[in-house]
Image (tube, rainbow, N blue to C red; front, side):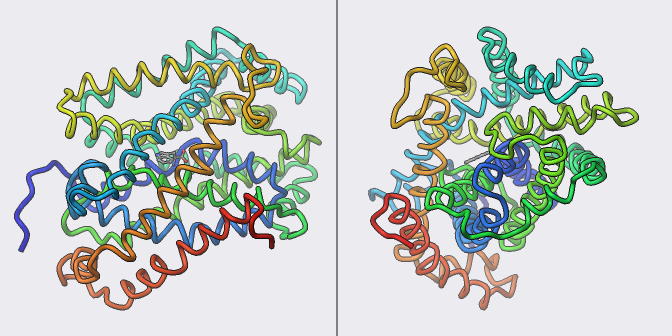
Length: 456
Ligand code: TRP
């Protein structure tokens, strides 16, 4: 038997599920999923995304849970404990870097959400037309001062919660508010589906046309799968380290992936019918959510109250996701580097605010810093691309290789089956086939395809 480890854990199985879902569900579902699906042609992208979740996302999520719960440590410490004095811990170090890079642009978009909540409360969207919705989004991102202020507000909120310690807070918030978000998105769906021309939007989302699928789209779908499920950089390791000893991690992974995907689908069903009904461009990019949702609520009873509720719950979802991002460096700095939790949090927030401003000032070509580009991307797109499409999949590949080839099978069997309490033999075999062969191969093929070495 293992020694009892005196590290704080989530309070129950249900709390484990909701906290983990709180990390997964965020701007990825409501903002990124719809706009990437729109840019990459709809149904075929969606199908590839599902395959990525199943064959890459799930096995990696389970691996991260294993690493975290087995060691009960932060991402870097966990890998050091599993494979002492090896290079595997660079996965954790890369993860810390990825967490910051994601936060540089995530805090900017979260700032827009907070700002939209404020504007919705003020009544800025009452009876809004399509032109007005577009103009308002333009004004919000061009700022230049207000989006920076809201980004800073976001970071103050996130760091205050983090400095107080995450577990109880996250549990309570997600357990009550996540179901509400779910209900509200379903209300959006009903409204969107009853708009004239809704069918065209549904057709866009669900009609699979492989002619639309480019190599970059496949890489984007893969990157989205990582981003969505908070994988490839240690978030799920860190959360796994707070899991209860009797948690069935297999079922947690499946439930989280399914629920998360459901939320994304429901968001897509709210957005695309609206886009087509109003004759907007599905490939409009990062503004898609912000231009459509005010329209969804513009002409229905209690529309302005529902709009406030929508942005409030989206702000909460974005915030719990950010907590899980920043928790990775904070846990690392405080547990491995001897910096107090509070200082680690402040340090991280200041770094994110300083570099994050570059993202906020380069969202659009016409933005203040929009003219500075790297490989054709401004800071905002660059941070997103480097993290989602490069660092997370590479982190994932390394995790798969380590789990598949460098960890003893019996140890994994023991941990995943809670030391024999769960009957897992068959499932663990499937897991090993995936993590050794299927997941790494898919990752490598998508990479080679995207840089043009392999063509299919
Ligand atoms: N999954 C979250 C979302 O979709 C974002 C997120 C939280 C994340 N933690 C992460 C992404 C870790 C990558 C890695 O909004």
